[in-house]
Length: 182
Image (cartoon, rainbow, N blue to C red; front, top):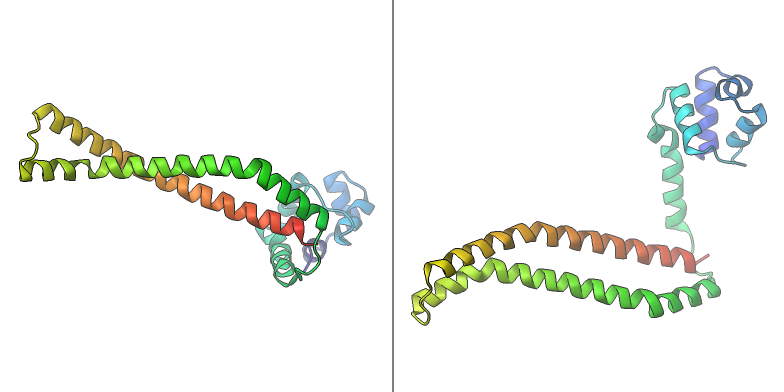
């Protein structure tokens, strides 16, 4: 079901005419008609007003539309390639995006290495004390404990940064794929 069909069914369920909806929203009847025929889309503010008018949440009002869009994306054949978009995506990714991505991934890797080193520092101190290869003064032991606490604080940051970057790159790949295929 399209957004227009959802709007039409919601209007009919409330026993409203296109004219009455138009008066309430301060638009023309033709505008309401175009929304219901999927010729134009109402903006988000009007959708909010429509959901209030029809007694539906925005999600209920557009849920069928979201399901249809997802279904259309799943069944859309990926056999027609937009060659100009493909060239643009390749050129942009090679020239600009790859260098930035390499820097960001390297920084993320460095964050993980630092976090891991900080977290295992007490283990290294303990091994040094047990084997007797090094005698650590109390100040070094306290600094090691402080570094361990900092490492524990860095772990959630590194985890969140990794999740954000993975989500970003997956979305970026999906965007490029939609751009290339018609």
